Image 1 (cartoon, rainbow, N blue to C red):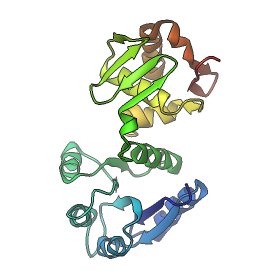
Image 2 (cartoon, rainbow, N blue to C red):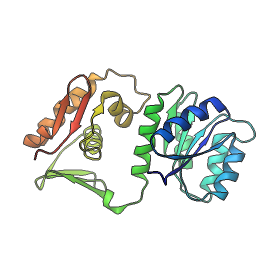
Image 3 (cartoon, helix red, strand yellow):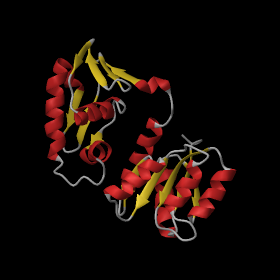
Image 4 (tube, one colour):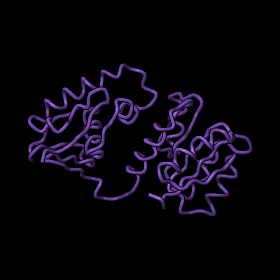
Length: 226
């Protein structure tokens, strides 16, 4: 992972340091910029940047303006950091090609999880069109799931939940991890909603539902039985 370079853009040095420290701890290379204009200049000279974490409110050039300029020549993934997020803000960003939003204050561990998820989604590897394990096949293009060749009907959230489990096989996932990835970090519902969805998903997977292991006091892990 040490060849993955991330540009962190924020006018607050303290915030940049917080994000940088967690990213470096997780093996990423980090470049910093204090405003949108500096970010554009740095990106122009560092085409190997794999992802940008961009604050919205900054002097000289704000995050939206900088993202718009960068988007004119690159489809590099951009995670937008904002003090408050409304549907209007998010729609504006998504129309510009923003890949993800995260609202301050946030847990840096959650941000790292977002970074990992966005990088997985935007690798452009055609093998990601299909994810399979233990007879379960997820077709992301057709948005369907088959179990031993038989298609099963899943709700949108059940589909996303299963996809998250399969792309993190063998990894212990806390309820916070799952809420962040499947329901988004801004979701303030009771974490027990995850347990309800897991119960329904297990039932629809039949005997394959046993692959979703409960980790007491932690969350869940997807693991195919040997």
